[in-house]
Image (cartoon, rainbow, N blue to C red; front, side, top):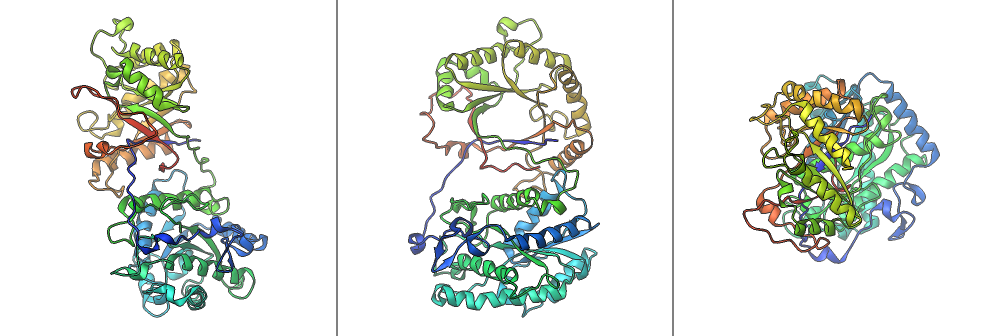
Length: 545
């Protein structure tokens, strides 16, 4: 079963980071370093420069995951400070919206601001604060099964300790924290460690000097060495302690160099206070965690339902256009522009039919008046040996037969219809007023007609773009109500191959900032003429299930 969410975006703005003195120093993520060395220590997340645990440790992880999969309730909680607390809020939201997640998994956010590593065993965090949160949610300390631990030892001028001195001080703190976790939460089976995602623009001076590198980088080494103690048998024997795992190695360097897990951190991901991620970054970090848990061959055994559909395959990027009346501006100049912009990729034209005007050769047949412009555009691309495909956006204000006939007309003209979308913004107040039942009553008859003759053409249903639980500014409750109904439909009634579309909108000021030297020079148009914005769809943008 495939549930793909299509994200249409209008641009990507790159902001140059302002770095301090540490611009000259880079820190290669442990998993990227691999068998290479840093100050004499071999990299990798696990011993001997490896990013996967040795076979004996994998066997322990498998055993823990099998026990969790058999559990009728799995309490999953984070232990750490403010970054983790805000990210876990988003992780909870995305988990609830994740199709096929294990309904037995319960997430309880027990992270707390300023909860640094050195405070774990000396304040009330593990013995009072966390149990209090659990009690408020109806659980006890004995109910906890999985811990996600992400914290740090913060100290101004940390580099003065030296790499070895730092490890000698911090590794015992991790060991003490694990001992206390084991005492307070005796049934924990897995502790998933995450490296801290710091940024190089935090320098060794100012209010956040204690967050300056190499703190986050060295902390990742302390985690690695702590896990190695369990692997080599010098601490945390498997019979009496949870299995330790380096699950989320967030740490990256230089704002855009991904670790081998695909996670990157850019300057635009960091709030003005520097240590904390922006609201969009919290969403993307949570998506990274969800992706990791649902796709890891072992962790997915308890995180996902046994009957969960396979993860959708991401589509390689394309360029395309989006918007009503976009056929009106497909003059020769604009056609050449989009042909040049497409290059070796596939140009995607999201066609929103227009029902006014003469309609050309199709006039009088009940087809959209601009339908032959789509045929002309496809022929133009074929003439220039370029690839094009069409997303047909239904007009749900007309009848099902008219929509079906228009689609068949295009197919008979050899127009490559890639996907059919169930109307554009039809959920809106002026149309179906966010009542999904009404929306469904309009799109389902068209879908049934199409499926009867063209069952291989994917059908996509919209989500409203700004739900109140989406972690974005201006979230709207009616969007959430509509989206909840869509998600329930996808889980209980939708056809196995149905898809979901999300549209993300940007304002005119942001559009003006669009700058991509890989595209041709902007074509000048009459200011009164609408021009559909070039959009990019790519793997660098997370979809949400």
